Image (cartoon, rainbow, N blue to C red; front, side, top):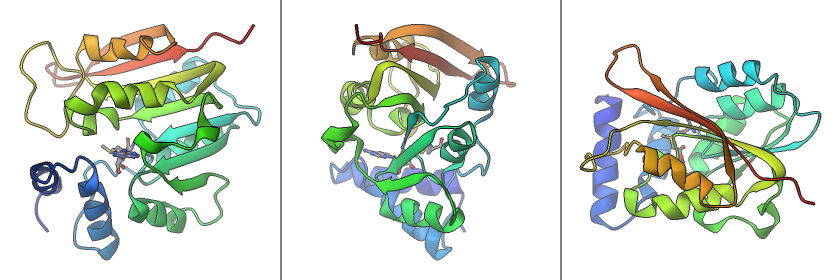
Length: 222
Ligand SMILES: C[S@@+](CC[C@H](N)C(=O)[O-])C[C@H]1O[C@@H](n2cnc3c(N)ncnc32)[C@H](O)[C@@H]1O
């Protein structure tokens, strides 16, 4: 099996050449389900920065609706469900959704194949918690504003959005994926009716790279 990162990049480059920004995800997950490739971001644990944040804010859903964007194999969705949310989690890849359903057969999470750019009308401002980890950075920069707007649009009045992405400094866009986010990129989340509660730039252990962890809120309806 080839290096998972290199293979994912090769699939992404092929898709980009065909002007298809998202088709490679399904190819990769289909290969993974067939046992011929590995998904590089498949960590099998909820993201540690999500867990740390949830502990810090004493996150508990009390049955409120939550949405997990680009859920992949579901670790963050299962984590939100364990914290008391009624979770819907979606991914553009039907094979990812088949894989996550097989992985958690008795799950309370509603896993569904859906495209961020064509979300159901019923999801509009419907979720008290929205979790976005690494989907925006996995999409080409030309789709960034639309991706951010679509994510923001799902946050209910009074709801919160937690975003975790790789950081990058200002300057030329690197060859991705991923395409990490600048400060201006992370601020895009406030151009869509949300306000920033907390924006952290957290250095990685290597002292060179870093992650954004940012929490946004939509004002409660008056
Ligand atoms: C880098 S992975 C991150 C997966 C997961 N959030 C995690 O942190 O492990 C990006 C995910 O977004 C999904 N994705 C990409 N474009 C999407 C779109 N337009 N709509 C829904 N999901 C999408 C991919 O299939 C993939 O599972």
